[in-house]
Each structure stands twice: as structure tokens, then as C-alpha cells.
Image 1 (cartoon, rainbow, N blue to C red):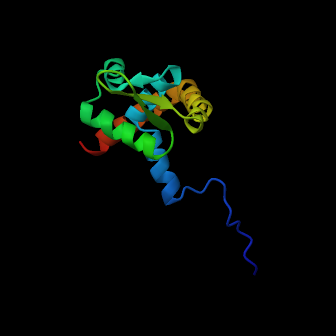
Image 2 (image 1 turned 120 degrees about the horizontal axis):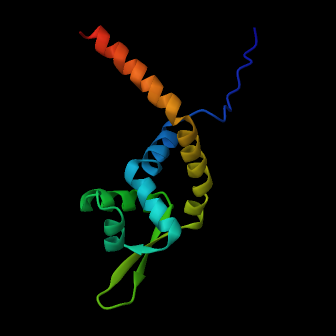
Image 3 (image 1 turned 30 degrees about the vertical axis):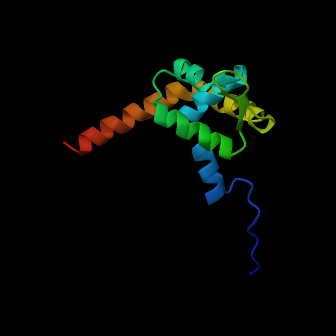
Length: 128
């Protein structure tokens, strides 16, 4: 019998895809992207805009996003020298898919909360 399965599955999540999504869609990356979509920011501005992020986590997030070509650093010729972060054209293309995911989450949150409550109640009953 011939193999009729498609080897070019567009929904296949390979290791590189999974790593990229983990790096771009994590908690801090979404917050950083939200800020940088509005305007370029210095590190201190990002820290103020996202007060719950630690300096270490923000630094790691910025490095990951820069490595993936989503944001870029610009050295400003000021005294003292400062670095400004801005979203790249590639990064701007993320806005629509992220908005779609957020809209999906908002639309389905009542169902998700109900599923969580049902699961937690069953889990509690099984473990008592």
C-alpha cells in the first residue's frame, strides 16, 4: 500500500519552531513587544513599564528577541551613551498573529475557566 501521508505538514511543530515560539511568546517577551510596538525604549523605560520583571529576566528577554531578529539595539550618541531598543520590520509582523491569539483567549476564557474548574475538582476528588 503506498504511503499517502503528507511530509510537508504545515502544522508540524519541529524543534526549531518550538524553540522560537518558546522564546517569542513567553510572558516577558509579550510584555516587551507590547511596549516596543508603541515606541522605541531604553532599558530603564522598559523596567518602569514592566515593573514585575527582574533586571536579569529583562536582559535575557531582550537578548533572545534580538538574537531572533525581532528587536534591535541602537547605540545613541548621548552623554552618557545609551542604548535604545526598537522593534524590527520582522518583529512588526508578529503583531497580527499575537493579537489573534489574544482575541481567541479572550473569547474562550469562560470555557477554559470552566474546564480548569472541572479538572481541578476531579483531580481533588481523585487525590482525597
